[in-house]
Image (cartoon, rainbow, N blue to C red):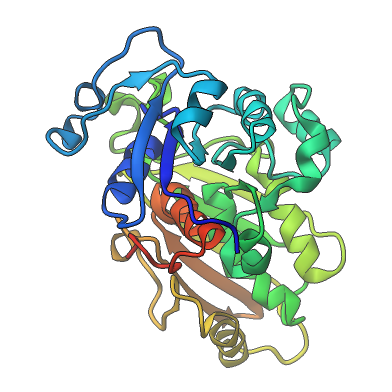
Length: 340
């Protein structure tokens, strides 16, 4: 086991995922937060950026260089936008820092697929084979030995946890899978965009990224692994006028004599020992998992179709909570530390 490290820095600490990371790490008994990074020139106190943290942490957000981070931290959580994140991660890994990257830069294994969907040349493509996908329910052993973890996207977390066990068990067809996901407005990040303004999103529901959402190839990649043959899902995200949460309803074709009972049994078997996945009888709701690192999932066979429904908090299990779960695994801490 590697030497346990507890000096932690966060790059991109001004956003929603940065705030949630700080909240979680402040209650982690093995962590000392030593640095908060920003790409802005100003050095605001963290309480100015996140008033919720007043009196809890005496740090300023700083435009830190990788060398400065290496002097002050052992692990860095990177919450920067895609491409910018990989540029920073490349330098951090050269300095032998452990990194948990919350961008999309290391999630896709094929750089050509990344460049097609993200429209940029990958800044650190040679490091893609070194990154471990940070979904503990699938890759716990690999995460324990990793020094670079690619934290999953929020939508992919909800869809993969719902469908992976059923594809792996051969209970649903890999063809014709439709995923209808609805997310709270915080999924769009803290930087203002017109579509997220209150008069635009309140009392309204909209589909977006139809056929073009960048989480689609990420979902395809891991469901293909589960099925053992190519999977191309039809994934449609929707914006819901609530702060947080994702509800994904996945539609698939059951194979053979698959029933509600056999689907539920497969989910229960897959997640029997998982600390943060609950197979529930009633259809889950986002309120039941809000502010937690939990995923609630259920399944039905209705009129010859399989329905699998999952709910997560997009900022916790879909981002910062999963990152802390990965951090715990990487450092030999109890996996549930600081998480509920």
